Image (cartoon, rainbow, N blue to C red; front, top):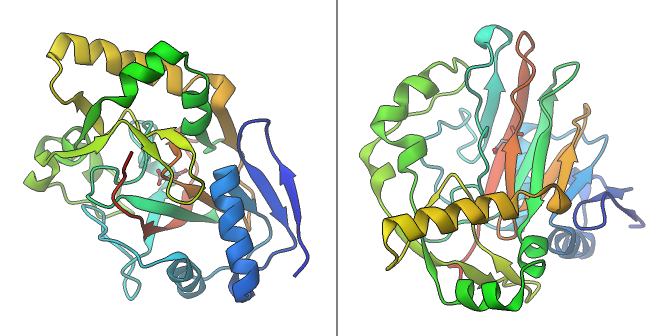
Length: 281
Ligand code: SIN
């Protein structure tokens, strides 16, 4: 297979031209996987994945892990329909907070595959931030401080029972909040990416809610700093969706945010996640 790699910014993101994800041979798949790790977000245009072929492609990257809280598509236990109907207004959307998918799991996803199905005429972009670039931009003293810390990941501010009314407003999705959202999982704040060997800040605003062994005032100050630093515009790529787009991102080295600026229009994308390993330093 011959393909072209077109970087999308100086820090992250690349469009890969000349690839049909539904018919990729094994050699090309390993090239594409390497590019996903290297560029962190990769864009494939003009694809025609069905839920079945998306699921098959995703499975070739690795088994899907557990999909908590969010109902999956009938017959496809690893496919989530990310959908907001035209009449659902602008109050809430799925993914509309900086996060890395399911980082509160023991083995958070390595990759997410998101395929465009029905797009608004404008808006509904997805913004990504590179946690590799954010880490690299820190000074030596801050790096030394952060390297020694462990972060507490929890879904309590997204999926605990008190959040149910927000999710229930989305008719096209079935999201069931429960007490497991209050569980806490500790991961190192700075990890080594298992495929690139690069150091990465394994931080995201939605699920990293505390720092182990730090008093709450100091932790809140540090988390505010990390949020402001890691989502700085210097580390971002903003994806403007087109019909036929499939975007794959590396959850181990990015955060993302789905912009909710298309009230009055419908937006649907299909998402699969691939199980990763235990994050480690
Ligand atoms: C997600 O956060 O998984 C969905 C992103 C999007 O809808 O753009």
